Length: 322
Image 1 (cartoon, one colour):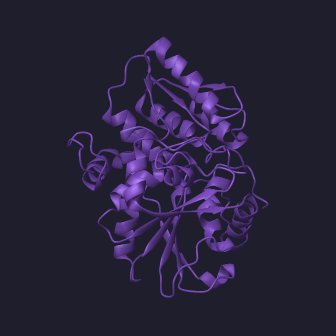
Image 2: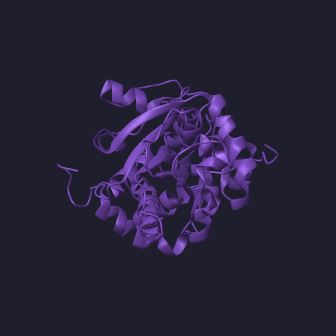
């Protein structure tokens, strides 16, 4: 991005350097190709990136390790606010690296995500109704203790870490027998994932399309306003895709690199969860299924011969019999 110094850039080179640093600690999650007809869709086979198989059950482990490995961590340890997945990832990374962690989550966080955090040995604080409430409590804790704040999406290292999922997908697709990927659908909450992925894929030729719930159109409203603005923060995926507004760091990247954003209703997200379970036995959380919902609902309609990939980003749910 123009105007940024080399040390502060969020671009493909910085994502690649971050990948080398975190590679010993994160999994290479697989790509699979499935027939569109299996889901009642037409067109070419679909490619799914199974990022929910990452440590802690979501892509968030990438950004968590990037923060803890690229930044100086004080004796007070780290503090994170989260709807659940980010907290579970920071807790996992902290335990792996022998760092103290305190995680703040709102009451909307799912039991599966709370259980993940508790199992890691991190100190867990549950309070407030929404992510913004947890963030305020975490910021107060940082001011009091001097711990390192690990932001879920509006932190350079977070975006760089999440962007490694995009580089990994690009390399896997290039090595496959198919002709590659034209378009990648990515769910949007605060924007750390899509911002990092869009930066990583800027020269790849892969088009990045954002998908948001109608009940939490954070990037959609930001692009319409020309800047991050408060948006509704509710719906079925509120524990992962409803932060009120997208991050300041990701917004210039999204404005330049994200092709467009489509919105999906809660009913389509629930249907995507059900279809992923019925066809592939993938138990996705709502936020993890949102990008796939864009295809099933018709919110995103591929052109003839367009090869589409979907990043399935999280599976921290207790729901199995969908």
